Length: 304
Length: 247
Image 1: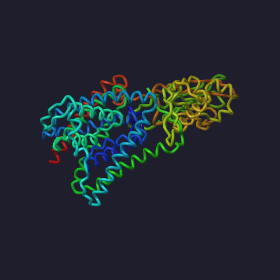
Image 2: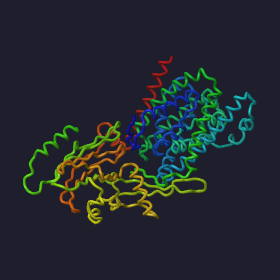
Image 3: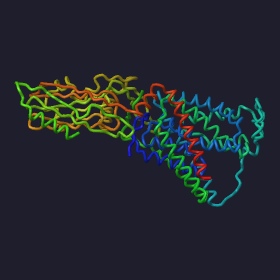
């Protein structure tokens, strides 16, 4: 069942896009990661222009993370002050990233950049997950040395602009969360990801926030970062396809429910292994795409 | 649709031709193509009567498109997009549908004068920055547009009935430039164009699709803010609803 996407200006199979949304939602319900990093490559594989894939990816995350953020906020799991400080950074990073995307697109290099970022990111995330789940399956529960935990108090306690974060029970420098925010904001606008997979470990190991508020605060931060980036991608780059975004959201919201139910019944280690294999194979497919000489060297695209 | 066309043709057959030269008459079975989200291609039937024995060429052109073209270049082990060129002035769609091979109908000069060769599409082409290998770029545009069925030469598409009537079923692709198309019909005999007629065909988005893409194009900031607000509410609503139904 083919449908015509008004902004991407192309035909796609409706069921395939629902399936993408559902499979990514399913994985995130199952394992608890956001899965935004799978949507953009899948859209690029079916021929959506990279910039539209990235812009629509950001809009899709707004829809899929709104419900979860609200639930965590009701439970009091959001460190609002930390969230706002992170947003100062990620909003600046997001605005900067959208301009970088515009420049890269004008020079014809946006597609290359996205491909390299994804090969690097998915390769790294996928292989770490693969190693972790293989170790877990082997039953080697050796507590790995965590260098950050061993000498963590050192350098960033001496930075200026220290501030209290009562909800997390922390006193840290403003510079740290703002800089992290900038980095995540740039990733959101260049890759169409929420960045939860970076934010959560950073909050736990670097900022030392209590686990209780980590997921809620990270969701809060990524919800409003993707909100800003999606508006900018539509305004600056005309890169948000409304039909595509809505179909992906509906698919992934229901996929998530299905994943949560099934996840409760299945063993966690096997699930992580499956997700790791999916992530690694997407990275390998992207890498393969730029290593093999294409049949047609030229490509045409509509432009504004 | 087909039935109406056949009725029209039958009527034409019945009309006696007074005078020496009857005019070239054409009609389309519909005058617009509506692009909705469910649009995945269409066919337009053109039918008509010609002044007497001869051949018919139907040329379908769309407004020019602004496209970007890039060439993959090898960089170390990788094949990456190289420099991007913006190309303007090339029609999005160019069909030459005829009742016999074009080369048999007229000499090269005549064909070129009436735009009956695919090379005509490059007549008004502008590329910026100017390409290093313009011939290779033109060849690539032809190759890709032919593969996408946007440029098409079919020398047996026009069917002639009884030496007086003709019809052609024009394929309209799924992905196409919008705007007013021109369907130009030429009647040729002995290498000379004796009569021509043009019919416009409107290809446009309609209803909600039209409104959405217009707002997104003309007021991108309003569109972005409204759409993201909508998505936020949708996600919130679904989240609350699904949580309730699970609890």
